[in-house]
Amino acid sequence: MNEHWDKKTQIIGLLNHSTYVSGEFIAQKVGLSRTAVNNHIAQLADYGVDVFSVKGKGYKLPKPLPLFDETKLINGIENRCFYFNEIESTNAFMLQHAEELKNGDICIAEYQSAGRGRRGRQWVSPYGQHVYASLFWRLNQGMNAAMGLSLVVACSIVKSLTEFGVDALGVKWPNDIYRDNKKLAGILIELSGHTMDECNLVIGFGINMSMSDQHANLIDQPWSDLSSLESMPDKTALITSIHKQLKLDLILFEAEGLTPFISQWQQNDLFYEKEINLLMAPNNISGVCKGIDKQGAVLVETDGIITPYIGGEISLRAK
Image 1 (cartoon, rainbow, N blue to C red):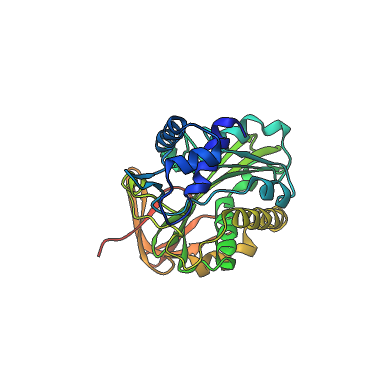
Image 2 (tube, rainbow, N blue to C red):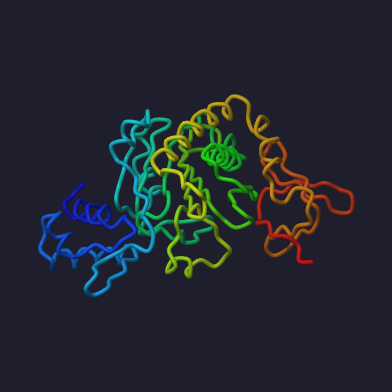
């Protein structure tokens, strides 16, 4: 960690309490001048960290900022773990270094300056507030063998979240995880290689932990996070658990395909047996969702006929 982030994380640690902390106290503890403390706090705002400032009282975070414990990450994850305070994109980093990586290597960041979601959408990635990670996996069977993989990843994450006491979870085909019917997590899988030969997978995922008000206003859909839980999961323990579960499930997926995961998906499918619109430009397909098949296609029943669809986005049919 460079001094730039070393000082900032020390300041965040001092502010991760319910009371105001004076600038003088911070300066003394961190070994900086008052001016330098002010500069660091101003810079934190550029990374999406809200800091309240009250003259005569000092500084305070609106709510605790959950950060990863780098030492526990490195020691707790069996594979190589690349940890960054800031990075453009964890997916981009892994794709750039794909030839040097082994199955299970993972990149984790506190902040992404160019985080991406599905179809090129921006993934809002303020510092320290959420989980941003990308796991590497090499498939020997080629790109075709990756069909349905986003569903497996969603099942893995849901299983880990459930073990940490997160309730009201659901999945939305093909790559979203919801809590209380609002988006909690997203998955972005990127591939490089050949259709039939060995290909490299980068499995990116983001989980909302504690959304700030300023970033909530940037999101154009209903969202959820984990801050309302009675006890929010420790980020380091959660990502370590997800990493282990993903590795187990990817090995199973390579051996048996999507079949072992279909029942788990169906148990959590928010749209199973509901009327939906499948948005497939320029046309929309309306019908009843019948789950997924062994290739990861969504099954839609229209006029008594069930048809599998690979592309598109689901939205509930308006009543």
